[in-house]
Amino acid sequence: MPALTLGVVSTYPPREDGIATYTRDVLHAVRAGPDRITAEVAAITDSEAFYAYPRQVRWEIEQGNPTSFADAGRALTRARVDVVSIQHEFGLFGIWGEPLIDYTAALLETVKTPVVTTLHTVLPQPRADIREAIRQLCERSAAVVVMVNLGTKILVEDYEIERAKLVMIPHGVPVVRRSETQHMKQALRLDGYTVICTFGLLSRGKGIEDAIRAMPAIVERHPDVLYLIMGETHPQVRQYEGESYRAELVALARELGISRHVRFLNQYLESRDLIRYLQATDVYITPYHDRNQITSGTLSYALGCGRAIVSTPYVYAGEALAEGRGLFAEFENPESIARCVNLYLENTAFRMETQERALEYGHTMAWPVVGTRYAEVFRRAARGEPTASEL
Image (tube, rainbow, N blue to C red; front, side, top):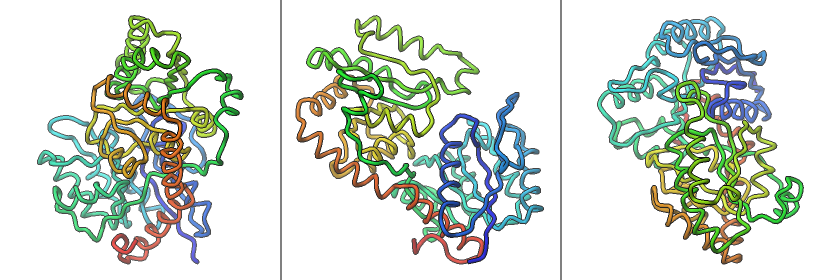
């Protein structure tokens, strides 16, 4: 099989955001396969930031500068990459507002190479400017990847995108060995606790305040409960409002008299450490407020680790936790969250059954599987062959 060089436009570690981590993991999965694929990255860098990027990052794009996006397109074309992967999120490729300011067009005007786009946000019933921006991006793309089947439905019905271009590839999760929860609790000094956790970069809209407000009703029946809130404040949020959201959460726990049942782990966790904490978790919670959220790396990881999950029914969770793979709590409803958590904690057989279903589903999302599917999409795009409808 001939070698293939992939150009990538995305954020990239050590920048700390979910898309950067996702992109790194996709590339690792693709390169680990037998397809002889190498990658050269054009990393989107936030203003006034400096990152010690790895060697595969050949170019930097100044976020918020359309000229920089256009220059990156020219550089990728000159480098003669075989196909370009765009990891698209509105706030990275423009300015999220009304109207939308979109810099993707500047990139696409100068890239003369087949494009495969992964959409990290797909809004149903979009405004006209959002609809037009996504339509143009999809029309220029040889294939468009979404992470849930509903994303395909929305793109076809609300954006009138050609179905043959669309392919669903799940988020991707590490291959996790089954581990005894109690053993991992002892290793992390969590022995004696019933552990509930949420992880990810902190920002408003994550709904963590709802989970904290649920804690008194949980603690009343399970006084050994500890709620771990893992992750640092999102760097862009910290830039504008510092640690005010975290401070509000700490104050709320104190006000409710449950401070000793809530613990913050204020650091960015690498995958290995994150998995260890998930393996020590009894119940995982994603209480997000955004009904239209169509991806969630945190929820994917929890599924991959076979956790009992409580989530609000945002788009991604609605599909990922279907068929008994989790419990749904109502949006912004602490009482509903408490009922779901208590149901797991008071019915061990039910919790174990749900964990088994989650783990089985998680196996279909393992990175080696996802990497193989991405590699096939990239190769077909590079050869000018139909990419999506047959996968």
